[in-house]
Image (cartoon, rainbow, N blue to C red; front, side, top):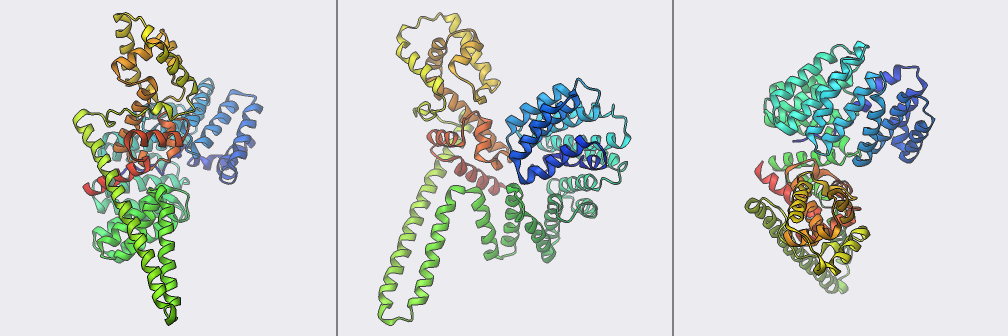
Length: 531
């Protein structure tokens, strides 16, 4: 169970130091990050930009660019955020401010973990931990180290499934927390993470209970980590068959989830509480939260669901009002029956459609087991669907018109094939700027040769080749990474190089036969069956 709610550990956890300082610059930094951004993100970005322009030292310039990176991160715009964070790191590495150098490493470690590049994340975590040794202030050093140890614990949980190593890191984090007793939030979060490892992974409910209770004593009541503690305690109470207490904890977590903008938290709590009600035979209550969960997972079905609910309510209201009118009774029954019949027909059509889509989904998964490739061979011309790639399409047209005139030797073909293999291994196809002309420059050849080799050996044109690689990549991420299944369409599109979420959704469906959101819902169903 990957936990991606605790994402900005090097931003808010260090706010305690900014609150103590008399540095006007630092106060503006934290005010912009925590207060302005919550109310007006465009204004926060403008302030960050102004701070960068007004900076007179490398430290202030790097810090301002780090603020911009943090603001983009809050919006889940990870490509922009990482670009600014890397730039900030280059600048801060030229200073002797080791605290800021460690913090930018922490920000990058967290960002790369979120997008699934775990080895890159660990590289920055290790670097940041070493840099923290150079911080002179003992308490600041202890706090930064405790946070990096939490990050390394995430790495062991998500990448290696090594829960013993994660516990070791978190225990070390607690040792550093003991040196900063005023930082109760950091202490509480570390105990929450330990409780989660023992509860959800190791099933050691006694130790989980111990850590959760310590976390509750240190965390604010209205705080998302507190809600995660209550979720864990609900699971423990259910395992102990103390169902009334379990429900109370779940409802506390639910209360927070429904007042937050964290869709991942809502999804977790809706799933947990609906399972609780199902296992305690409270099916009506379970249905309420299953429906809420479906509304999060199946956005495309939301409008239709709303329409059906409205029609049912309308029928019931009309039947109730007109039942007393004996003269119109038969007419009303006829109208109501017709509407109900229409709803039944719609339901049957949707069920058939869903079954057909599920069969397509199973075909893709089974195809991977046989070929180690998700996307089946397709003749769909997806290159015609992405109008934003004008340069690439023009290149394709030019090459197709002159295909018969190409004279290419075997050595050149072999070299281009080697370049294309490396292109696939490095996952360069996920970059939005990829085009024939770009690769021609990278391969030191011309676009006609590349197009010819792709057509000959990949059995498709260049744009279809790139789209197929991108869809294969994102399907693999959806099938193997829980956090990717919680991404918004825009974030998924951006990760695999599409110019917009609409272009991504269109090409995904043209190749697989089903929409990305439907694909995700089927994966969730398959994973749930195995629990």
